Image (cartoon, rainbow, N blue to C red; front, side, top):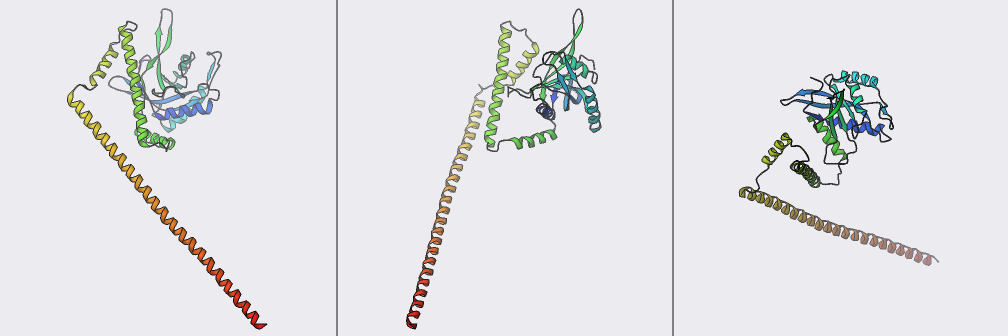
Length: 324
């Protein structure tokens, strides 16, 4: 593979995100960025090369805030860590490095050249540990390609599409983790509705981005990219035609059926709640009657014991009078 080949996409697995957040939480007390090494594999697809980032580990890193050219990366620590990781899983190779950015900095090209000693085409992944937009994934992937000018050849970063992916075992682990941190006071229905709302917000944001791009292209502010236009056309072709009468009728019938089920379920919940309330009142009334009967028996017992004691005292007084 040539050093300037750009991969088709980069797939970041959940363990990498958790490790980066843990690294940032443990080390970054002054809100500075942290750096680590990415492990994974490269696989060929029909359309290009796909990079799967499966694991990562932290590397000691320091940089001067005033002078971006002054930085330190402990590559000896990296070599020792990689030798230990290699004993555990030899299939995972060094494929790049990560930073908590949140943006590209001037020294990143130099750091990328250091990582290039261990892999011919390192992937630079920025993991935003404090994302401001919940609708976007917190990762951005780049590769360095040569920028040839008249006088010299420099390296520049090119953006690569990235996504979050997981194996079946990783999905199970993430579900258990989310189950532990999920708010138990929120119902499942409310959770589903929240997810639907977030999905609709993300869809609206992307549609606004497409509309803004088309407006700029039509106004001549941006050049036309035929690949983007083809993708937009495919998206529009996949959209259903809502003007078809049969489809509109089917959607109405489906919506009415769902609303009927929700209405009947609400009635059943109300009836069950009212039934439980009545049973609770009857149970409390029966307990109140038992308590009153028990109090009456206790009072009657006290009265009987007092009368018995009084009669005993009278008998003793009469005996003393008869003796005198």
